[in-house]
Amino acid sequence: MKFLTISDLKEQAGEQAVAVSVDCELQSRSQRQTKGGKPYLVLTFADATGSFNLNAWSDAPMFEAASGMTDGTVLRLHAEWTQNQYGLNAGNIAWEQLDGDALEDFYAGDAKTAEKQRRDWEAIRTFCTSLKDPRLHALADHFIQDLGAKFRRAAAARKNHHARRGGLVEHVAQMMRTADVVCSAYPQLNRDLLITGVLFHDCGKLWENQYAEKGFAQGFSVHGEMLGHIPLGIELVNKLWRDVAEGPAAKGWLTLEPASETVRLHLLHLVASHHGEYQFGSPTLPRTPEAIALHHIDNLDAKLEMMKDAYAQANQLADGIYEKQFPLPANLVEPLPAFDAPPAIAKSSGTGELF
Image (cartoon, rainbow, N blue to C red; front, side, top):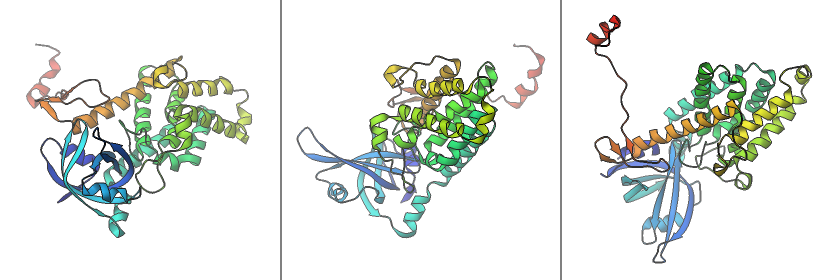
């Protein structure tokens, strides 16, 4: 039987069953009841590439077995997998608990994902090094030095997009690349402020969507539940700002324009307004060009990541039409490939004539 990551499994499973195995960590168990009053468990499994839910019915062997497992147990699941709009289903499932070398290999994670996140982390560090404003440069450096390890473990969300260990690094790096290009197209934007806003916009998720030092089960925290990542992010930026303002370099910032307090306020506004609307959790609406840009860059990256996953996982309803995946608004249509000019056309395209 072939072994897959969760991401690969979601790409391969469809209406026709595929018999493969997947190594995954039991993230959580939630007991529910059917309409008939029978208990069942919703089991959440995760690895380096993502997560999925399985229902364990009361009359199935998995129900009794999972009831006795602790969260964090790592299993190798053997099954005939199918997938529909509600997620993965496992037929004829069997399992074994990993230990020894197999367990250590699992904790090492998926090599492809790890390499991508390594490159993305280096991109983030490079963008932060490029900041010209000494106050924002010092703030970013302080954040990376003090909380870099925690940052690299966090997810960008609990579900929907970049919902995996290290997903926040992937999300922030891609947003920084986009912000850099947007600033080239709109030079009136304050690049230093926008890049720093990207770095800190989701920094509260270091507590809201955090992972333990080892493993792929995304935990919960009282601070994340009671405050949410936007208030936590505002508090963190203020704390880090006070730290750098008390350093020796800050004495040279007193005469800088714009004034340090104004810079701090504009950065806090980016964190506070990045969801764009009150109904989506922003305590204020975007009121500056950089705030508008950050909101749309954030939304663009999240939506395109959702669409990438949806194309990989959704069943086809017809040729080139894919089943709707929540929270996207409609069925997806296969995207148009880029034009690749045949050699003969490419050679003759320098005439300047359209026809």
